[in-house]
Image 1 (cartoon, one colour):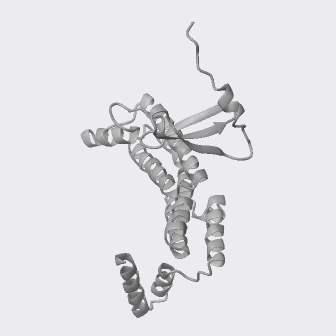
Image 2 (cartoon, one colour):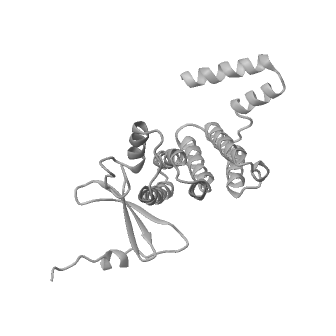
Image 3 (cartoon, one colour):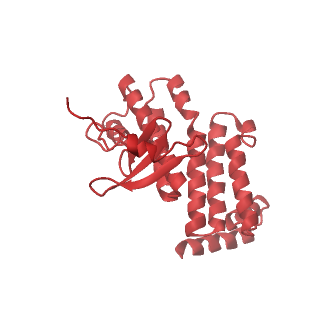
Length: 244
């Protein structure tokens, strides 16, 4: 009988802590970077590019790429039962990698993986076999948007400024609000746990870094108060910043 590889030594040297997410970035045998996540009964290993499992799907890099091509060829295509299962696998794989990137503070990578999931949600919604299947996935959109907003804000804090981080949170909250409006649940928006956490993060950044109203917030106020000359000046300043 061929001797099988086991992970006893690796697992014994990396204990599982149920109170914290254990993640590390290591080198594979060929020198490539791989992510490893310690779970209750072992270790998950994820590729850092392409699909986290490193596999192709129907000749494409991801299920998303395959569905985009399918939709171009047949705009009326409806997902098969097998495709629905494959989509769920890809959702879960990208979720695991997204939380790994967040844990390691690779915020740009977390944003990229959140964007992949959002695009996959968008295309599967348009190709969904029924409303029940759509609803079972759409319920997780705010959670993905929360991760994306959090990662974008913390990335902006590292690479740009606290003001840009606050604006990233405001943009994310606006997107989340659209979701609540779409599903006629606006009354639950302000009390939603994820929304509250983002607002708390925004205000803590505002206090810690002594940031008043951002230019975008000032612009929104000026428009609401019909102070159009001020609004024009603020737009000019925003345009100037974008050029720089």
